View 1 (cartoon, rainbow, N blue to C red):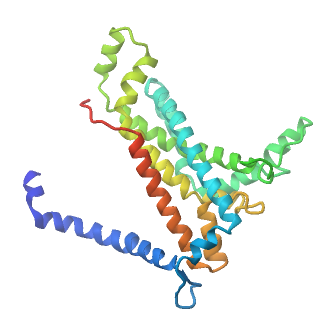
View 2 (view 1 turned 135 degrees about the horizontal axis):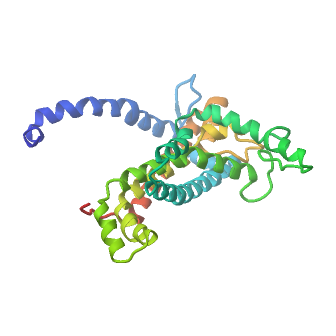
View 3 (view 1 turned 120 degrees about the vertical axis):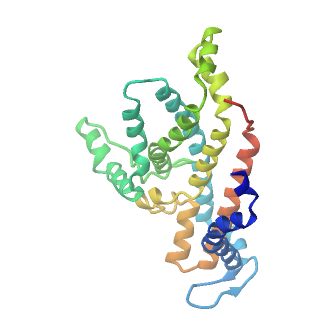
Length: 294
């Protein structure tokens, strides 16, 4: 292996395909989007350079304000809830012997299901006359307008979609934490039990410090996923009512593919990329990681 790592030709041969794929699929489109963000571009005609006009128009776009607020809400909600619940589930399932694989598969199952199908399913569950409200009506209660209520700073449909997203993706965080926890030597826990530590204290003083690198990774994945969140919202509400459940990704789609404002949509995409990079850098800065021998 050391000889292979010293062979520059071998390194170039192995890196070149991935580098070409990265350049063609990711780097060039990002550069094009940055250029288009400074243009008036409708797809059928050549891009016309207009400077910062698209970015200035964002300040007047009320729907973008809703989209940015909802995306930041998803970011905070997703990072906090998936961190806490994912760690809790990972800790509980790691310490049980019987039924571990069954519960793990049940919790992780929504992650591998189609988000489109799940979005349609939950839309029917929270529809005004079906699902939950139909069940409540049998007990003489009137259910709320789960996906239509627009009162409050964070409206009810956003909370509903956030909890559906938590249900779908918490299994991913749980699996990441369980993979890291399984690599911790059991002798460390045995030594702590001999010294009189409970399982809770062992989790706090042994598990949490040793899985901190995975916490940073999982939080970064959750943050990026929440900022580019699209499928559940589009299938459950399509950004309505009155654009109140728009997020940056749905607003980008609406402006680009419905109104053919590809330049403006590219500007939204640039803002989205900058937010993803800034949040990832912030998480890596805040969540300090150290290397331990396990």
